[in-house]
Length: 157
Image (cartoon, rainbow, N blue to C red):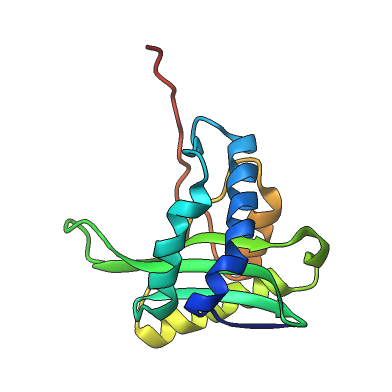
C-alpha cells in the first residue's frame, strides 16, 4: 500500500469513489450537499486538470495496482481584506471502507500538508460534515483545529 500523486489516467478509477463520497455527504445533509445527477461526471475534467496542476494536490492510495483512496486539494485566493492572500483547501478525502483504520487517510493528509508547505502556502483549510466526528479526529491528529462553525438555514418557497 502506498500513496502517490495522481495522474490523469487515474481519474476513471477515482470517479466511483467520488460517487460514494457524494452519496455519503448527501445522506448526511441533503440541503448542504444536494448534488446534481452524476456529480462524478462533473468532477472528471476538474480532476484531470488537478492531476497536472502546479497549484493543487491530487493524491491516490494504491494497493496492488488498485486505487483505494484519494485526496483532492487546491490553492485558493483569499478575499482582499485579510493579510493572508491565499490558502490551500482540502476538498475531498476518501478511503474505501475495507481499507480504513490503516493510516491511509492520515498519510494522504500529511503528504498534502508537506506539499503545500514546500509551495510556501501558510494555511490549509477544510470542511467536515457536522456528523463526521471520525474526520474531525483524523484532522486534529494532523494538526488541524476548529476555526469556524458553519450554520445553514433553509428558506421556504
